[in-house]
Structure formats: structure tokens, C-alpha cells
Length: 443
Image (tube, rainbow, N blue to C red; front, side, top):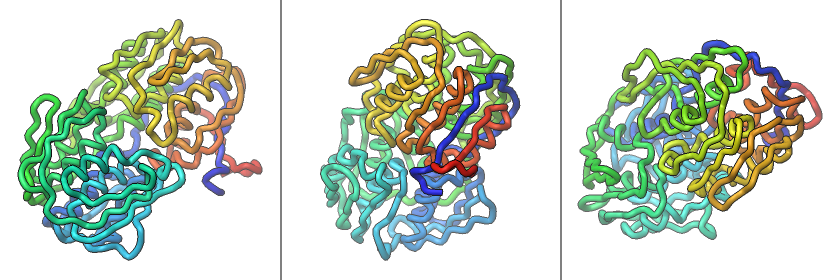
């Protein structure tokens, strides 16, 4: 089955309930592989997300000489090469669909002594990379993009200089890339952000023994640090948990229970947004996994209402906004999303993709440069194109549960990049998804 041909056909039915555990956090899995690769000693990662994005990061580090074992599907053993132990790869490194892998890798590799080229699939090759390349050049890195996009070529550079970078955008990927380059730079490297973003890099670097100075919106590291191997336990991904959460929100029965979900405060904007919309989400069994807070989330049926999404919550839920668009389509009244222009720089232009898809299902939507206004109402049967964007596909799959008839979602194969087993997980809650190729054979 080709990537472009795969489709979901969802049959409506909103009697959704059950208990699930979603796969490990993608952001943490990426970082565990990268940091373990440049650490001294053996890093063991449990709960690793075996999605295509994270496997691309794993393969990238292997291509640079790092020995990595997988004793189980969700367990990885990394024999660290040390800060300067990576080797020139035999060919360009293909990072598939993963913007996180490419942007963080740009920072990690900017201080290496060898040249390397980073590329990816058609979607990744359309995404902006100058937001990372420019500050890295300010540090002395030699980086070329292709009209601002991948492929990205790093010439290899020793002797980076620390900078204090005031970022114009709130992006954990930009912040992380600069901090990783800062490990190879002389002096202090600091990033000052306009708003809070996820802090997995800061937390994990600290776990690997790096002194990370965090003060408000400023994060800083000193060059010359050595990472020491540690064991990493990866909590369940709140971005993936958002889809069963949404199923609980649209369900007429419930409850939907999701276990061991990472509730890092820099990632819980989606919980705040759904609560503002009237969702009944309850937390229990709080504990720590791998230095990250986790909890069991229980969603009870509740009537959703349209709201104006507070701008300060946008960067704390940026990856979850396709679900916000989808749930706004059935909320009573109007939902206003603004300050979310970063959504246009994801795997697709997520604002336009969601607006067009909602319109195809009869939902009233007004599009703005930085968001949209969605008026809740009836969701009709129809066909929407996910544009190969995994989160768009999954958001429409959940919304289809309350449509008036079947919804076909095109170009869904990239769901495997972040949520392998999505259809089985959602099927266990009662969501009826048929996976087929373009000629109708069941996958």
C-alpha cells in the first residue's frame, strides 16, 4: 500500500468508552535517542515510541556510528559515543516526516567536525528551516538550506561561540536546537522565548548531568559539558492521548480512561483548553516517570461550548490544535482561535487543512492568517484530505464519530509516524475505522 493511497473510512457512532494506554511520548523519545548517542556510557530507554519519526532519529544516529540495540519494540539500549564520537555518515541522512528530528539534529550536528546533509520526505522538504539555521549561523555554524527548506547541508565546524538568542517565535524545536549547539560552543548559550514552550530538552539534559539554567523564559547551558548515560522512562504522549481524550468529549456514554499520560506543565495547554470548552476531564494516580509528571486521565461526557482560546495557551498546545478545531465543530456557539500562525509551519498548513476539511463536512468556518473562527453545528458526511498530516487525519477520524454519515479521510499513512496502533487503540473505544487503499482493499 503506498503512502499516498491509504485512506480511513469512519462510520459514525458516538457510544465510545473504555480504558487505553497510548504509546510513549514522541518528543521525549527523540531526545532520549539523541542525548544517549552523545553521552558517555549506556543509556536504556523504556517506553520508546516505535513510530516512524522516532525510528528515523534512531537510524540517523546509527548511520553516524552509534551502536543501538532494541531488545523489545519499546525498549532501546544506546551505547553512547560521547560528545565528539559521532562519525561521518555514508550518505545523506533521511529523517522522513520528522521536523523535530531535523531541527534538533541541525543543532546537534552544527558543532561536529564532519559534513552532513539532512533530508526527508516531500512534506518535510516543504517546511521552514531558516528559523533554526539563522541563530546557528550566528554561533559560527556553517549551514546551507535549500531556499530556506531541506535538504540542509552542514559543512562541519569546530569552535562555535555562545550567543544570547532572543527568539521571535515560541518554538521548543528552535530552543532545543540552539541549546544542543551550545553544548559545543565556547561560553554560555542562552535562548529567551516570547512564551513558555515544552521543556523536555532542559529536563532531559539535566538528567544527563548538564547544568541547565532556567529563569523564567530564559534557558541557558555552558559549553564543554559532558553527558553521562542514564536510564530514561518515557511517559505516554499527551499529544497522542489527545485523540482518546477527544473521543471521550464526543461520546454519549463514556467514560474514556487513559493511563500514565505525561502532564508536564509545558504540555498541558490542551487540558486547559478542553476544560474551558466544558470538557469533564479528571486526573488521578499522579506520579513521576523518568522525571516527568504523569497521571491517569478520565473523560466523562459533557456538552462543549465555543470559547475564545487564550493566546497564552497556544504554544502549550500547538501540536494538539487539530483536535481543538475538530471539537469546535460540535461545540455550541463560536470558537475563536488566534495567535496560532505557527500551525502553518507544521507537517501541513494545519489552519488551511482543518478549515478546508471542516467546510467539506458542512461546518461554518472563517479563516484568518493566525487562526480561525468555527461555528459549531451539524457535521455532515463527506470526504476530507489530511494532506499526509498525521494529526489532521486523526482529528477528523474522531470528529467523524458524530457525523451524519460516513467520513472518508484521504492520505492517512503518516499516522504511523507518531501513533502506531492508532486504529486499534481507537477501535477498542468503539470508533469504527476501516483502513483501505485507493482501490478499496482492506489494510
